[in-house]
Length: 153
Image 1: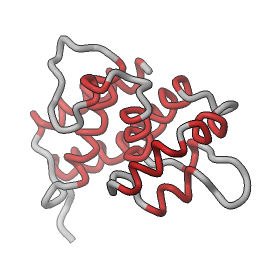
Image 2: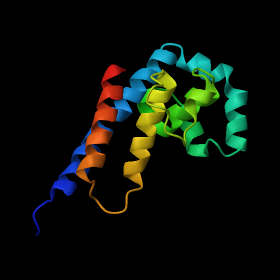
Image 3: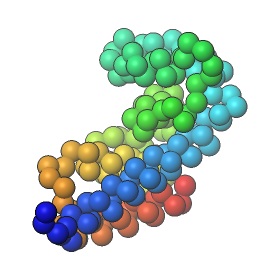
Image 4: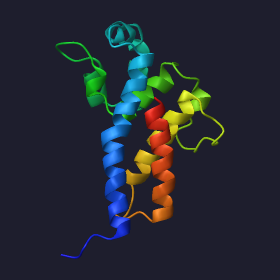
């Protein structure tokens, strides 16, 4: 077995940061905007809107089952980052222009929406990497960006 390279170590460190910190940071912000105490009522009030998103295939059947469980109440602890971002964008808790999911927001934009998009884009970048290495310069940029956003939430 070959020793791990610096670029390999960078990859594993970013993975730990993303899956250990980013999901929780987004959940923390989600819970601030959608109080866990009233999440059930909020989802019930928006059920028609969410069913339309399912019809448009923006939400999947498994996601709808998480939002409307057969027993018990919905909890953000069961939501993944994609579902939380979809709810934030489509239930208008954050201005939709702030949640353009495909474009890196300008560094001057420090809004909640821009910060959430940054986290999601970094997470997606890692999820779609070919190979398991990250160059040091890219690692430093990602690390700084992610930690500044995640720890400010």
